[in-house]
Image 1 (cartoon, rainbow, N blue to C red):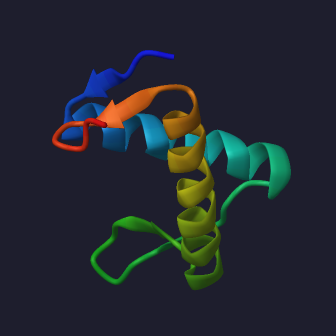
Image 2: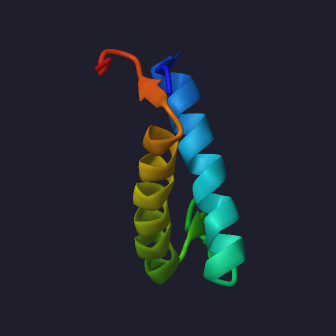
Amino acid sequence: MRDMNLTNEQWIELYSDLAMVLADLYGGGLETEVAPNGDRIFTEYSEEKFIEFAGDAEYCLGQLGFVKAGEES
């Protein structure tokens, strides 16, 4: 398959969205909590799971022919 080049912003958006889908599908979703400043953030456990799913998502994107800007093969 031919490389489909993405900007860094597109790459981050795609792998983040796909990681959330994988978390919902295989991990039962990710829990959040309210930080002292009022922001909604992942719990420590969910942050770790998101990182794992993000790695899986990046692998899937690469297998589908998506390439992050500056990393063309």
